[in-house]
Image (cartoon, rainbow, N blue to C red; front, side, top):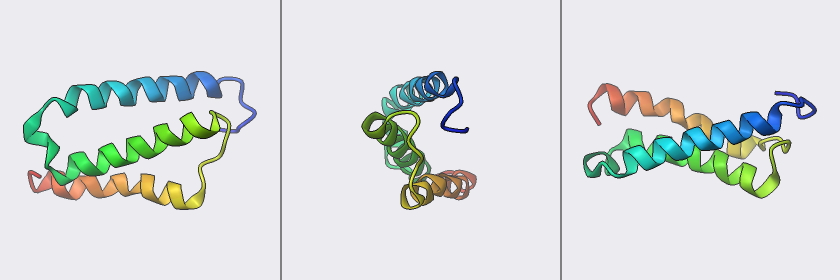
Length: 83
């Protein structure tokens, strides 16, 4: 989204709420905590939330952090193997 979009704050708030709900739901599942797919997705969600908490909803995500977030795509590989 463009940082001047008037809906960006609402979109970021919805993103954070959705990610917090996901973490709250799956963090309780002890069988999932050690899985690589859970770790990768949790790490990406944590990086996104942390960025917006620290810098606000209009701050662009730096390239290094964006690369870490995009590692979430690697979660598909462990999931396909049942991890």
